[in-house]
Length: 277
Image 1 (cartoon, one colour):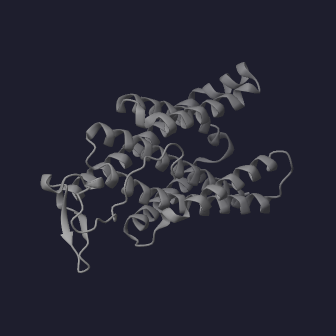
Image 2 (cartoon, rainbow, N blue to C red):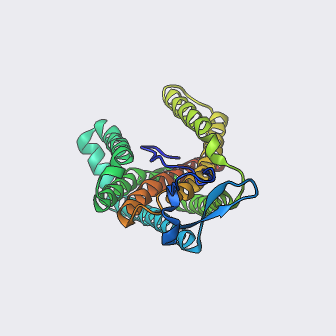
């Protein structure tokens, strides 16, 4: 799911009438090897990706998932170090109630800023902001070591990783178009956030928390499929825009994929923890 600015471009299935001036769209000039013009039985010319384009898209996809993986590793390391050193507890004692909300506010601010500005900043700058965000997330998530056992955290991470991989492969290989479900997923996310805010001011039952956690898992599973397809589509759109633009898009997509995994992991962890209780 794209949480910031969604770059626009022509769809890869846009077509041209015979005799019209060639519009190369997302695949660039076909004479440069980015795509080939093919005439269908109805006399319509379409631009088809070549092996060069497909390899470029594969490299770009690998880059996005690589950035996401690095960010996850950084989050995990910071969380472990913060827990071992007691840094979060010290920060909370020094800052008081502000210590609970300040990290989350800063994280939300960085995510919004990065999502809105990533296409207009240098790729290296965007990468730094992304890693800073991942480190802050690790600082905040260090509290899970106080709430859950190491075994529960390990099981939740393993389940999430396997589930995430399967969903990603499904999203990249299925012919179903999950991109059409974007508005529904946004509405579902808003409802989930509002529900959790309300539950902060009441005393929810264990069953209610389990239901919310299960809904969260389903929602972010759908978002994982959506973002896998979105990542593939957006790289196709920018295949001919140069390496700097591809790096920027990689950070944008990596942020979306990262958030999908982290949220799915937290809901799986919550569900496992409630079940063990």
